[in-house]
Length: 168
Image (cartoon, rainbow, N blue to C red; front, side, top):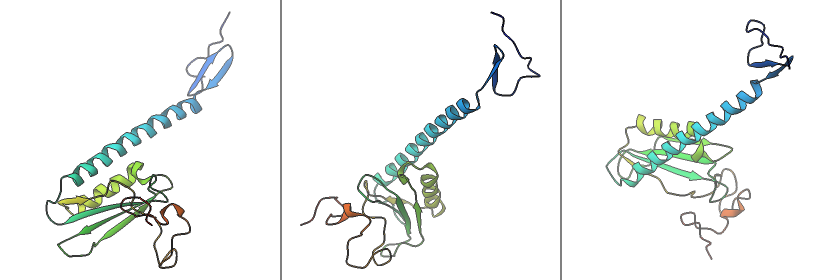
């Protein structure tokens, strides 16, 4: 079988020549690169999440204290994270920053990197972070009436936000 080879100067970039047919590799290569990029971002997010958890496990090291709280429609998915700085004992957190995501914020490298940068910028000595999603991402009195359960997050209705257990 005689192959019709295309010289390098005539071949299209990212194509394979042979038997007179040219097959584009752009789509295949983009897919493989995208998969590698997603995996790399997942690994980086995992490292950042572990670093924040490790810093939180160290206990009280002094002020300022960085607080991190995860919120979501249920106890499995965190779609919102709030980070705050408590400058001294008895003080309210100020400043506070909020991040949102369509997926889980705990797997978002950009958001976790933003939290890390926020804590570094304020030179926190201690990090306080619960190991779970602690409630609905909607704000009582703003997103739904005070004293009522969030209509968008039925999972949290009648649950203790710290344990996730049903309350009688």
